[in-house]
Length: 180
Image 1 (cartoon, rainbow, N blue to C red):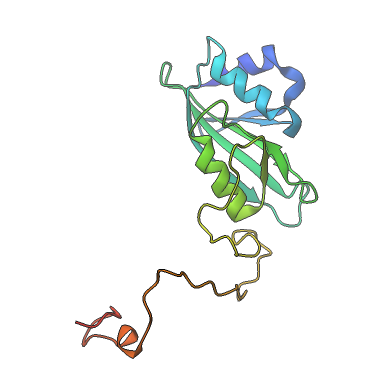
Image 2 (cartoon, rainbow, N blue to C red):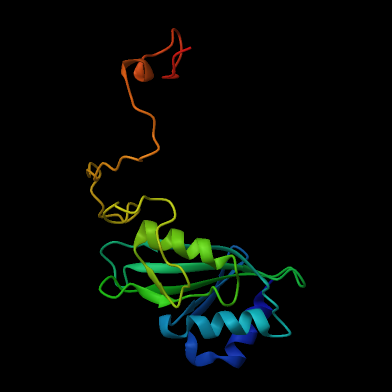
């Protein structure tokens, strides 16, 4: 169990913690948004934790609640085998949180994806731009208030081949739209 990780946080950085807990064997630390970088740095660098792997980073949208968003970091120590989940609430009117790219290189693309799909901006990120959606895309499609039937600007690629009637003809007995 990674209760030792939560104990280290309680001793070293108690003012950054909102709540500590465990659910079905998973240790969870809910931390203040303005101190999330400090908490992550302690978890990575402390001799008793050594959380050297950022397994995942994501955002949860709690539409109608305050704070609306929650940034979730899944960390693992390869030295000790501990896992811990760090969560920080982010309000809808100021969806900004510190970047963890200086702590783990893996945070780079994960933060870009979180910004692209949810609109949470990571302050200090070296290259925060869309990673999945195209540049002209408007909005953030994984937000719960994103319109289901939203229309996006059509952007033609200059290198795309011209379309004709043959490219959309179905092959016989196939779901594939290519022509033989």
